[in-house]
Image (cartoon, rainbow, N blue to C red):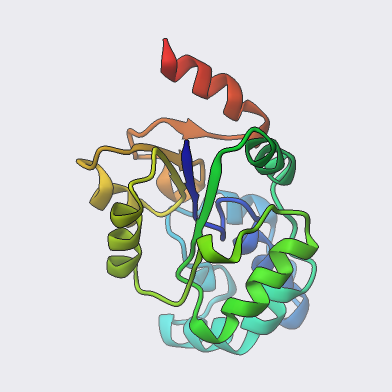
Length: 190
């Protein structure tokens, strides 16, 4: 089988990591429960920033957000390692900018994710991401972003939404914890 995965907020807890970094950088103590209640991807409003200020803060902090101690979600690494050991093809499709692509691959490997460099796609807008996903003829694809999942809705691919506060409205099968993937897949075959 061919499995495709978004990275940020699907396999790794990037937004919450960024949220914690913002608290530190801005010398703030915004409560994490406010973060978990957000109904949008962007986090800047929690820190009383405009969209422009939030975009600037995010872009200034990307290096630190991407390549410091951002944790994988529990069981994400082990689940993908098991898929790899069972002989499944694993593809990573991320909209991370080109400039961060090679380091992202290295970071994923350093953190234990099974990576085949020929199956790692980065540096594209969401529209291009959708086209790559279609062209790969994946059997399964996992993402957190509503716009990407909705665009793929009518494709012959089994889609899963990685549960996030901003995608609760989606009616796709959901994955809350990576340890449940194999039982979800068994349920799909029934």
